[in-house]
Amino acid sequence: MKRIVLIALFIWGAGSMDSRAENYGGEFLNLPVGAKAMGMGGAFGPVADDASALYWNPAGLGRLKSPEIMLAHTVLFANLASHDYLALVWPMNSKITVGAGWIRLGVDDIPRFSYTVGTPSTGSFGDNENAFYSSAGASFDKITFGKPWKIYPGGSIKFIYNKLDDRQATGLGVDAGVLIDINLAEWFIRRAESRPLMGMLPVAVENSNLGLLSLSAVAQDVGGTSIAWNTVKQHNDVRPAIYKMGLAYRQPVNILRSAVTISWEGSTEDYQKGRLGTELRYRNILAFRAGREQSQTTFGAGVSIWRFDVDYAYNSHDLGNTHRMGGSYKVR
Image (cartoon, rainbow, N blue to C red; front, top):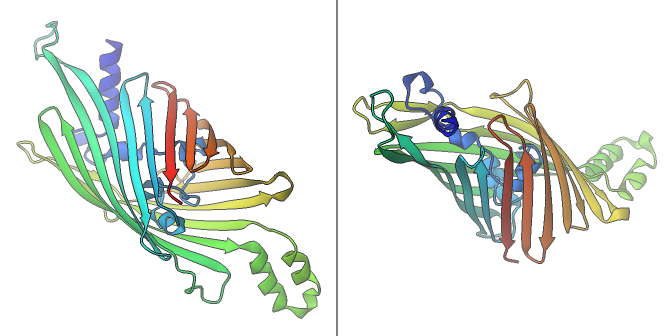
């Protein structure tokens, strides 16, 4: 009985066909992808430095200069559902990187009952929700308006295909994003050079590393995404547009051959809470992460060996704790 109740709650929350939830279609796309991103509380829009950028911020593809394949698998809510992510990114040249990805959420063996109370189950059915991404990102290092920054625009087109028992639904959505990376040392040098009274500041700044500041803006499901079911009443779920803004600061710690990243991201969906994340990367081999997603705390770790990255993340949930595993391979 507990499993049946959990399944009912999960299906309603992950995209119900009931008319009351018509503005909450495609809820499975709110489940985060990538163990690294989840370990940082999902504050990944301004970070977006791996193949999960297709989902978090397609502008991040412009940063990726090596082909990369990523695979992530998660068992959700006490083995109730499985959540998978597969992505491939490929630089076309020094300016443009393209990517393709697949997100799947599956709930199997849902008991089927007749309308008669007290009768045993007559079988089972499944709920499978899929999104296929086609994305591209670019690097604009010449269009800087005379400022020490790099601009990365990007976009994704996603095809949504859901199957609940013998009913199917399809939809087409668009995501867009932009990233701006600012070299703070160079920024202050230019500011100081334009103000002679600041004396030796340019020399002092030039000999230091003030880190990298990243600003991000993301629009998911631009204009809203309609998901049409092949039911008798031609029911449509609508996934409303979500807008996000974030910032991240990355500071190298040369004495430890390490780097610390702190990121924050807020959205129109949860603007009162936002997401916060941090990562300590040691010698580009070990990574330790922590974050805050709404009211939940997340933790994570990662290891990089040769061209492989393996990541783990943990977060608690009312329906059960979640362990996420993921890995990626870079072709250098």
